[in-house]
Length: 63
Image (cartoon, rainbow, N blue to C red; front, side, top):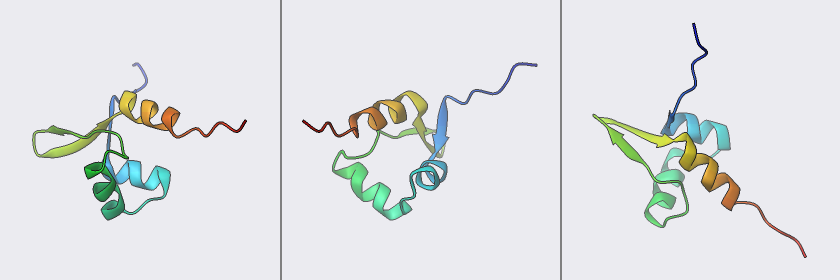
């Protein structure tokens, strides 16, 4: 059996991972500050590749 490698995560999992409130997440989605969300049936998900791209964009470079 191969290990499970999820390709999408729930909003709750994302919020827990980054210690943000769900309402903060949705407010920031509207302004483009969070990774894009997708609908899978009635479920809302974040693709892992979008999470990784968002995380990379959060880096601050000091000169």
